[in-house]
Image (cartoon, rainbow, N blue to C red; front, side, top):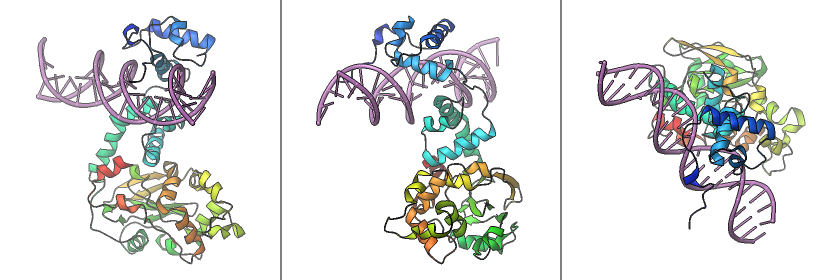
Length: 320
DNA sequence: AACATTAGCAACCGCACTCCA
DNA sequence: TTGGAGTGCGGTTGCTAATGT
């Protein structure tokens, strides 16, 4: 026995809404609200529509402050970054974009944004397969000795004065794929793979700034213990924005690509990547870093898929 | 000008979840 | 604890307009 239908399918109108229907529904809800029951609403309003259809029409079209039309670059960035981190959870993404509906964003992604990404990947400036290389830290070292643009490459591996470092690290490669640049903001070194693929969780993180951001300074750093007794662990896990908060919101960086082109990287574009960082390194690894004498951590646990040579760039993007 | 194809978007469908009796 | 009703969500469909041949 199947599930009971939500309404009498034979007696409901389907298809596009007429202006009259819109007006009826809008007027009723503005006057009386939904009454907490969409199923019963059509009858009250006097519409031969399914309750679900009414709900959808109201949420996606009739309710106040709905924004229609072109998406801004900033909205693009937010969508791409969130999609990269949480996938196709459109309602959550929509919650970050006032006036946009999940349906709107879903349609926009499926019809335009995804293609935009694919164009980038397939363009000469996009992802290109490169010979296998070593870890990000070694790549950074490699980049600092290369001819690629680099304003302050030496500081990435320096623990003596991390706070003095600010600026572009340089262009370099990640295993198997070309990346564009690393840049810093507030002492965090972000390793970015392509302007639109900045969400890829390739990071090199300065130990001191990481400690400060995640656990605060001084004695609180003692949560490097791995016995789970860290008082800040819960706070850390709940604080999904710690990285965002640590990023200079107005940070803009012109980055020179290996082919000579330049792009602008904006710190805002990294919103949401903090979870990817956690996913990528894992809390234990981050703790170990803080308690260790090393200065940087590099991607490892997350690399299975990202660096899988059998996966195409498209698969990798779609995966995210 | 006519037809075919593609793109964009509104709306539908069905599943999963929550709430409550 | 259970099961039904209502709701929310993501995937998909289908219509229309735009574009190409």
